Length: 234
Image 1 (cartoon, rainbow, N blue to C red):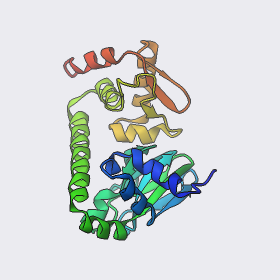
Image 2 (cartoon, one colour):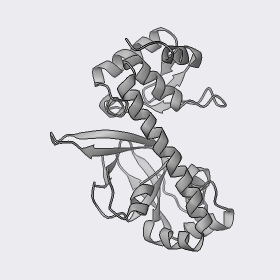
Image 3 (cartoon, rainbow, N blue to C red):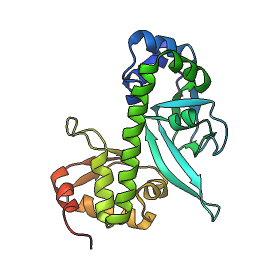
Image 4 (cartoon, one colour):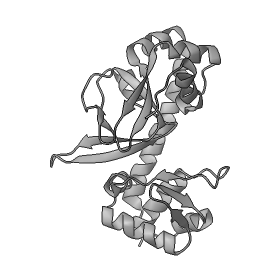
């Protein structure tokens, strides 16, 4: 796997991440001084639940899984983090350690930003703190929306909601989601069994609403998926 070899290699992923979108080029340069590259193999653990927060992360390429331990000693996947997304910000602000375990689904490259140094930097730039908190707040609202979807929608509507939430109408040909080799990871995020997820995806594909490759889903008929959400739960 190729390495992130230069300062620009560190800055470029941060520049396009929503969390750092309010940073100027000078500020990104400064953040790169306390950032470094991380490479993980598939299924390798980055950090575990309750460990002290040492860094926040931006995914350069690959796919990361955030999971929690549930009472039956199994891990439940709560979120999949794709290229361009960040994670572990809340743990940095809370000071209570990582609330989830992060592991690589595929071979992945990340930029790690030292949490302690970033917090000191934010104290010197309070306007950046407020902007980052606003980004985190929007993400929290999205997660609350996902919880409502799990509670109120049927299986097809849950999958449709997930796909539309990741669909960019300005880039309709772009894939909306990784399709992990372990379908159970995506099923867990959506709140379905693996068998039900595969059945719904196959049904959408037969109807021509989506196409899939081994690792991605592409929406062909966003209007049909939107119409599905307006139907009463069956």
